[in-house]
Structures are given as C-alpha cells and as structure tokens.
Length: 114
Length: 111
Image 1 (spheres, rainbow over the protein chains, first blue to last red):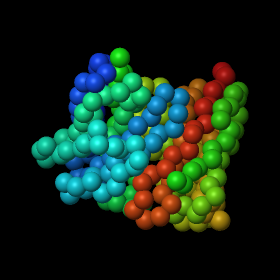
Image 2 (tube, chains in turn blue, yellow):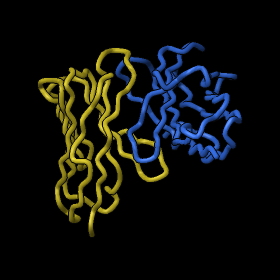
Image 3 (tube, each protein chain N blue to C red):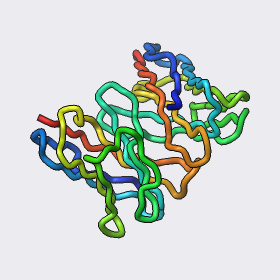
Image 4 (cartoon, rainbow over the protein chains, first blue to last red):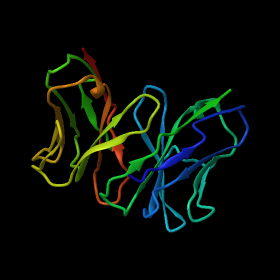
C-alpha cells in the first residue's frame, strides 16, 4: 500500500539553526499537510498546501516556518531559526483531494532543539 | 478554535475485553475520523465517517457518527495485545477546514 515517507526520522539541531524536514507524499495525492505533536500532547495542524500554494495555516505557522514543493515528489517544511519550543514530532500527511478526504500520515520526524 | 473532547484519557483492560471510547464537540462536525498511533510512528487511519448516524466496521473495530453530529464513538471488540496504542478522534467541522484532533485515549491491554 502506498505510504507517506518522511526523512530524517530524527533531527537534532542547535537553537537558532535552520532545519528542513522532508516528505514524499503518496504519488497521486494533490493536497499536502504538516502537523506538529509536542510530546504527550495532541496532533496540531500547521499548514495545508495545494497547487504550489498554501491553502490554510494555523497560528502556530508563523514567519519562521515555510513550505515548498521543490520538485514533483518532495514536500518540505523549513524552520528558519529554531527555538527550544519547536522540539516536537512533525508529521506530513497527504490526501487525494480537499474537504473530507482521509489524510494519510507519515511516521514523522522527531525534532530536538538543543 | 474548534475542540474535540476525547474520553477516557487512558484505559487498562484485560485481553479479550471490549473497549469503548468517545469524542464530543460543542460544534457540529461533518466528518469524523479515528486514528491509531503506535510509539514512534504516525497516526494510522482506522475508520472514516461521513454521514450522521453512519455506523462503520473495520474488523473488530466499529465506529459511529452521532446523530447530532457532535459526537462519535469507537468500539473495539475482543481486545488483543496489539491493540495497545493511542487512539485519536479527528474531524473536519466544515468542508475544507483543517483536521482537528482530540487529545487521544491511551489503551493498555493486559494479557
């Protein structure tokens, strides 16, 4: 069964450094998402992306965050100047279309900011 | 923002027992989804519900979309050790809005 893949599985970065998290969505999916899960807490929406544009973003997704689809397969989340509170699991998801179509999640990248 | 209240927060059950967990909201949702998360992995979709009153099964799992559109439950029958994990409800409260997650129910199965 097709799946969303994410790399790296674990990223350790010094505070203030830039980090790029990578995702390969399911190949026939058109909508892409990033979510964050702080340890022990619920999954929180960050941003949705369609047709090379951000569709919607949450309050968490401030100016230090950006997303990009640099080629036909990858979808990236960049955090420009990391803070300690950015430490979390970051999940990528994709869906065939918008609205109520089920979103399928990758296994996540654990980001640790030192 | 919209919130989902999920209960119970955690459960300890004996292998073979049935389990029930639920999710409620003060607002109407038009889609309810149930995900399971194993340690170190991403949420895996179990069941998706699209219509009020809809009852859907996936093996030993059964979920229902409440008639009021403000709640959903997930039942697991005859639990086994591999059912251990965190179960999240999630939903869209209108057409293209982001997916909102509950805080999860941590299930432990004692063999």
